[in-house]
Image: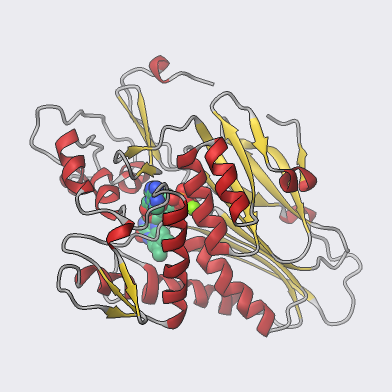
Amino acid sequence: MKRRTEKKLQIRKVYGKYAAGAVFLAGLLCLTGCGGRVQRYDSLDTAMGTVIRQSIYSGEDITAQVQEIIRSLEESELSWRLADTEIAKINAASGSGEAVLVSEKLYKDLTILLEVSQKSGGAFDFTVGPVVQLWNIDEWAAGEQVSGKQAAGEQVSGKQAAGEQAEAVIPDKEEIARALQYTGYEKVLLEDGGVTLLEGMSLDLGAVGKGLACDRIAALLEEKEVYGAVISVGGSILTYGKKPDGTPWQVGIINPENTSSMIGILSLEGQWCVSTSGDYERYVIVDGVKYHHILNPATGYPADSGIRSVTVFCKSGVLSDALSTACFVLGVEEGMELAKSYGAEVLFVDEEGMITMTDGMKDIFKETGEN
Ligand code: FAD
Ligand code: MG
């Protein structure tokens, strides 16, 4: 593992635009033995700033309906970047004292997320938005070659820098402290189907949008009586039903140290959601220091728990996604406890390349030896 100090004055494009923390192994999907009218339908698309890959075994092609679910989830409910989504309306009403009524589905998800925020002691916090915007890592990491520049002594914020073609400027401590005043899940009021935020606060569901999409897609697959499917929405992968050849679904876990290889493969049967959070997709290096996009809401700085990636699997996508983020911030011991409290299984890869996992994960994990 390269040490931070070894990295010279540099900032490089490191955001593999559509990389995922885990990948499903389409090559292993095989139609052999697929009887009746069930056929395999594949699709590749982009949404939520990531790649959507589908392989669905079914009597009809529903890949376009799956894409529509994700598009609608992003454009009508979740995006904090677009106007008129439910989240944008909640954010716009912050400080008004008025509760914004949201759909039943979204209210249920927000209730789950508030509980994860509480149970994780704020390691997962869906109000971290003001600090995320200050860091602006998505923009910096998405840019082409950009030059590094420390904010020290300069009156320029990360946000302003984004306006200047996404130049990475590390926010200073005062800016972070100011932004932190507008965070805190405990200040969010969820009541009677409505959400009320205090002035300056905002919700950011970047940590869970893809898992949430998996849940919505699973409901469609059930309704359509799909035979089997594996669908990856960026770092969250949904497995569903069976593979026609009777073998389990295969989900590979990327090696954080070398993202073109895998540390191992998970074999899953039936409906599961697998989510991975890592420090190797959306990050920048400024003056030899790496800044990634998963923040510790207690400090306002990128989480520094010694973890490179966390993979969580459980039945619920919103939970697997929220827990992968929370566990990344908490580190191995506390993360394991949190995951277990939800009956979820978790696998950590730390900075030394050490893999630690729960017993249920061991049952389905096979090391590939590629790392
Ligand atoms: P995780 O690793 O699970 O979480 C990291 C993300 O969650 C951060 O990016 C931040 O948004 C938030 N976060 C950070 N720390 C915490 C914490 N401690 N607790 C809670 N949340 C935290 N990307 C683009 O580049 N362009 C787009 O237009 C775009 N639109 C999007 C629209 C939607 C609806 C969604 C869900 C995502 C979109 N994205 C977009 C990607 C988004 O900005 C994040 O980068 C991405 O969702 C991070 O995914 P992840 O699995 O790596 O997240
Ligand atoms: Mg997550």
